[in-house]
Amino acid sequence: MSGIGVIFDCDGTLVDSMGAWHDVDRTLAAEAGITLTKEDADAITTMSLPEASAYLHEQCGLGASSEDVLAMIFERMRAFYANEVEARPGALAFVQGLHARGVPMAVASSTPPDMLVTCVERCGFAPYMKAVVSVDDLRTSKREPAVYDHARSFLGTDRAHTWGFEDAAYALDTLRAAGFRTGAIYDNDISGSWDALVARAELLIPTWEDLTAETFLDKVRA
Image (cartoon, rainbow, N blue to C red):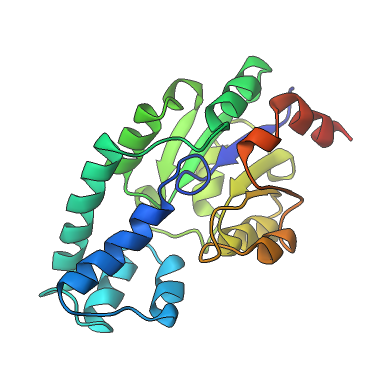
């Protein structure tokens, strides 16, 4: 379908990985005798990895430095992406369906580039994506639309005809404010409660198994 493009978030959207990200913070903290509060978890959710590492060191006392915390997180998560991460049920079929109908797609993620590439390849999405980009490529975060615009530049679409699929409420706020179309999939309340996603997304699904490429494109045409 000419003129329509889709940009997918990765973690929590295409793949089942947010539990691992939430656990790595808590696990590393617990190993150091530190308990993270709900306020800590909520704050970290919207941060880039360098920001989160600095927060965990400076506010929570984890590690010898923020760089030390970042290295610990990377070590744990690289192993997870290489050996354990799996696609969310129905996600690959949805992507394949869009590809078969000529819809250009990209991935835009807050995950570091090397882990992101490993994840997208392991879960089978790589052959269908025009680009796989990280906020680290632009030294930004999803509080700004730059990473979405960078991904969109590979699709040849404008913002008004480009859908961004996210599980995080704050990222949907960024997409909406920039004039993108917004799709959401529920993953967990830390990223975005069902009510928070309802308030921000034009289209919300509980799982990819509830949406086919054909049904999605019918909604776009309507």
